[in-house]
Image (tube, rainbow, N blue to C red; front, side, top):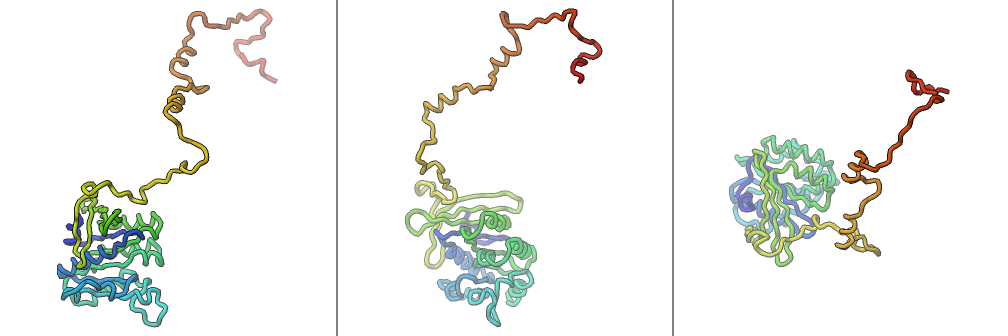
Length: 296
């Protein structure tokens, strides 16, 4: 599925590359940029985290002329008099103006490096609103964003990823320079497809898929999926042995009536006790008012 995404994102698509401190997704981001340039698409990059020289390092050849870098790296908050691009300009009007400054006839691909920088300084609802407007507005053909998932709360990550048509989560493998891409792709019909692939990236940013995690050894454990045992470091034992568990299951708890006990209580058998009472002449009992003796 990873080679399929590299061949092109559908019009109106939104791809998120989700990484963490354990493995950076920037090389995979540059692979998508390189693939878009090879398809003769114009690529606009909002660069918050790396300089233009660092981003273009390794992207050689004539297609680099169609790469437009909007410098939000030197002054992202607008502290100088004439900033090139600031985080506060992340809105539909400003981004549409930036993209239309170029004379390329085809709709461009917008690359955001990174969404985490924007989410640190703008509210998640405003960011999600702008992303949705960009997808529907037609100014850009597709959006590719890098998101550092371990920098945000899970609710923020979930809100942004909910807008995406494809999410690639990259995690490292135990050995070598390979990584696992956990891919979730949503089609226009609403169908959700998921896949996992082990890949590596060459010096020219070509992605080599090397198979499934199950083909190359035990499945890599995701740190987020590893649940800590709250009873691991206690000074006493909270676990039950098989014998103790069996005895617990056989124990009859008080005031819990079994089916047999309920039947015995509701249906008296021979020899069970009964109370027989016959009123005598001195009993003050009124048929019309049986509770008359309770009046005060």
